[in-house]
Amino acid sequence: MSSTDRVTVTHNSPITHVVLSRADKRNALDQAMLEAIADTIEQLSSARNTRAVVLSGDGEAFCAGLDFQSFAAMLQNPDSMDFMTRSHGDANLFQYVATGWRDLPMPVITALHGVAFGGGFQIMLGADIRVAAPETRFSIMEAKWGLVPDMGGMALMPAVARQDIVRRLTYTAEVFDATQALDWGFVTELADDPVTRALELAAQIAARSPDGTRASKRLISDTWNANRADTLMAESVAQKSVLGGENQMEAVMANFEKRAPKFKD
Figure 1: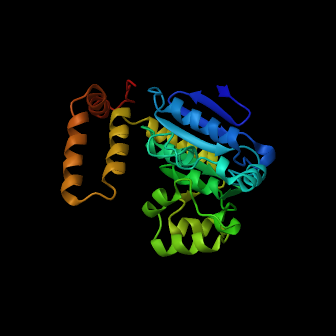
Figure 2: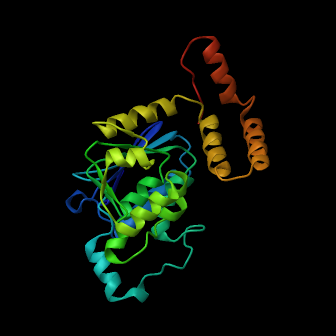
Figure 3: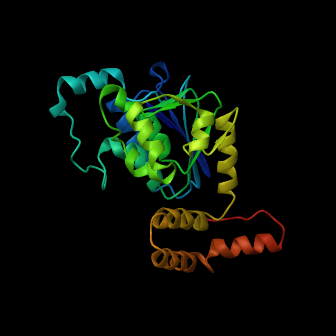
């Protein structure tokens, strides 16, 4: 286990559980929190022994959005905020703490409770799968403060929700519940204990070939908005990359022999 005063990471190979750990502030995002999340994503990007990640929040909420003191400082000195520098590939720091989860090689599952507002809402969208407690509330909160969603939301939302829904929620900053989030596509499923359910899903994923899972994640990401020809070629390339490999052959043998597979990371 590794820990800071903002993020706690527990490695229980092959599953890693990341917890936003600023419970007294409902895990609100200040500079230290942003940097801690970014550092965690960087570490996971090369964690070969991690096959699935669960992301959750400590205390009474997943994440309440931008820390008020950080927001006040931004208002007092807007020029001090560097939005334009691409410090993390094609993203700035704010965007990377959301999009970075989607770019990890292994699947990420968010377990949501309390609230996921503003930046917290955008962070959850970076996950592959989102499990929410029924009482969770959500909001694209930026419009309340005269701002736009700028933490990767515009890159992530089109894959899960209709454009008119995204427009409505972005323009109004309205708060909506988990049932509505499920209906609109922002949430994958509801569970009374989202962390337990997320860990169950992570265990199911971790029981599959890590080569196949990582190739599948790349394939889905690369082809989601691609044309038919590029998608069909990408399928072929991905299949060729895993077919006949050690882990793929182990999956076959384990099925034939009716035993649990023993994959190598």
